Image (tube, rainbow, N blue to C red):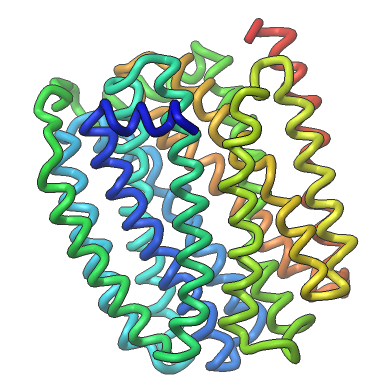
Length: 397
């Protein structure tokens, strides 16, 4: 833990970027609970919940080829200001959604917000290898995973309570206010030294980016390996559990909030515990641990309160898998292609996430139990462990 604190203390830009990440992520998850609570209050059908969950991932699939080029061309601070402005406006527009007839508008807002949010993430992650050493990048990714988990825990947990007392609309307004705070912090960033000097044309950059992946198969394999984390996109699954399995326990907002908070606590603890353990040899064991954690959750879903044990287990290893595979990708990528490679990585990750989200809804509609669906999600990490062993044997990681 001390090494995380030391990195934040001694690198001002990284500290400010981390603060902006926390505020943005906290606000995103805060309004995320509001969106799914709103859908349940409006008696939205399963397909609408599934479409909403999937729409959070679709933008990065279609925008990746362009967003990566934008990240590699536009100065990072200017780009962060632009995308955060768009995010803030899109959050404010959520207050106008009060009927299922406006579901189309909700989906458009989510598409825009998540699309520009993905660009912000790509800017931040492409900056890390420029700001820090290779060892520092590993620690920074672990810090980012902890920030994500803390923001997720507080955002999901507190939003459930906030919405219960103050309503969905006020949750969206609170999220907008957080973006205003984020702008103040972002104004203190000094990133002039990292402004892009790339003057190539867009089409040429797109061609070069795709050619880079073809000529560097290890990078392509690491992108595919990282995408296994996308299997743990539980939003749709938790919404279905809240609406069909646990609807008599508490209000929908509290069920969703507490479930996500219980899982997210382990996302904080996991990287701290596993940071010294994770390396090229132990990653397959961590992936098998992820399978075991999700399998335990599937077994314990019969009871809402007992399932918190499974939720903790399901989140314990995943942050470490995310940060380590992302670090391997950054360390094996040429700095000229950071933006494009991270964008392609997001694209593949979100293809998996969208596919899993859609498959959850389809299998549930066909009669599969949510426990069986959950176990199947966990079993994919056995495949992931075997795939990593193949990569390591053939490319010498």
